[in-house]
Amino acid sequence: MGIVSLSSFLIYPGKNLEDAPEALGTLLPLEGNLYGMLSDVFDRSDRECDIPIRFTIGENGSQTNPVRNMLVDFIGDPGLPKGRALANRLRDFTTKVPGLGLLFLILGRDEGRGEWKIALSRFPADRGILAEADEEGLRVEFIERIFMKSRTAYKAAVYRGRSLEAGFWSGHAVDKQLNAPNYQVAHYWIHEFLASDFKTTPKAGTKRFAVAMREATRDAPIEVQRELIGLRLLAGGLSGQSVSIQGVMEDYALSQEARRAITAQLPYEALITDQFVLDYEELERHAPFTTVELNTGGVLLAPSDKFNEVFRREAIDEASNLYQFMAEGEIVDERVRGRK
Amino acid sequence: MSRDELRKAYERRYRECLVKLNPTLEDYIREVVGEYPRIDRVVARPKAVDRFIAKAARTENGTPKYSDPLNQIQDQLAARIVTYYLFDVGRINQLINDYFASVEQKQIVPESEREFGYEGWHHVLFIPQDILTPDLPKGDFPEFFELQVNTLFQHAWAEANHDLGYKPPSQLDSKERRRIAFTAAQALTLP
Image (cartoon, rainbow over the protein chains, first blue to last red):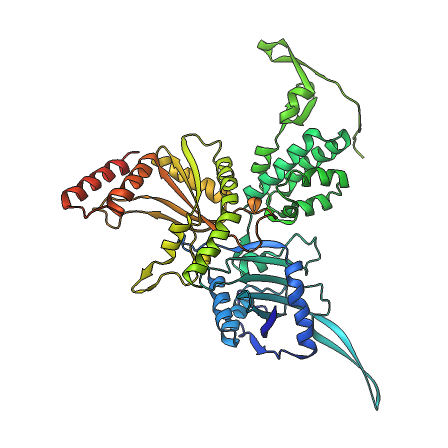
């Protein structure tokens, strides 16, 4: 797809500032080295932006979103004034932590398909050293505003659509700037600046994950079952965090077999990268564990749908709530924990 | 795009996408509300080709209402949840908000407090990622579907009114219109 407009804006941190400076912008030529570099960013954006996002609904329940409006306005008239509206919005949500940044708005058009594509990329300012040799010798300078020093460190969002009236409600995003796992996207980029959310709601994503874990556990070999049960117990601790199934599996170093077992339970494989906020209640609802604590200090724990199979229960004296539990199986792990 | 081209494009979408998506969407919604009591029915339908073409041809103040019907008409897939009582509607709306990404939701009410007429909740929702399987034709499926939530009486009223009041075979007189309004009033005042 050919690029038809290329603009750039310098974004100062402006969050909570009353007199934040206007974002300075310029239109860039559609040729030369910088164009080549940004063409590469534009082409890669389809592949690298892999988190489905969507603009959020208007407060009164209507189909309006301020950033979508700005985006569509810019696509219809890709000059500096419409671009600056987006740039100023980014400024208004930028704190000193992401700091100074350079925003590129790269607009492409496929006339044959009648399709637009727009990529928004923010690169952080970095520091570097400039060394220049001239007639007087070597000159070394410290430079504070270097952008795109690392082409793998940036935030981006990409949208495609054919209809300015009805399209551009969803897109894909990425945040490669964080020193954190790839799946933890900056709150300020998606939720604040883009006024967007993940395309999958917390409950829908968590249900998908929980059901996949539960079903994978049913028929898996015992060693995979152990991993999955461990994962299920630990996943509760991720409540409220943005996760993808792939990210969680990587973080907990699941074996390839366990990963395959979970992936096989998804409607299709690509959903492992889909992002959502983990919801503890939903996890409990679809992949629950049953625990029974005895007055002797013993605790019995098993997935709820297997508890009665794993532990056989016989009443000794029902009136006094006295029971005998029996379990049979191969010991695969045994630990003694004490105080250090 | 000419009318013939639009018809061919929609026929292809209908055949290759909507007909395939419809049962999976219906199942998905049914699963979301599955444990909720007092659900009378969950139904989904792809918009028939003739109805789509007729809607695409609508005008507003003498100009075409839709400049890009394939993208602008959002009920190419539409579903309805029918429940028993009014107090169920709010709870079902909450379930919908929990599991679907929404782009619009509104309560349809009569224009005046002194009138009775169609009432219900309309949602425009993103088609869930889970059912957009890779075998669907890439880029040729709608992004949204419409979901209505009605009580049994609202549904019955809407169905009857669609034939009697909304698209009557002949002009209704005031007595007939009053009878329809009376029916609506009875439907809408039940708990």
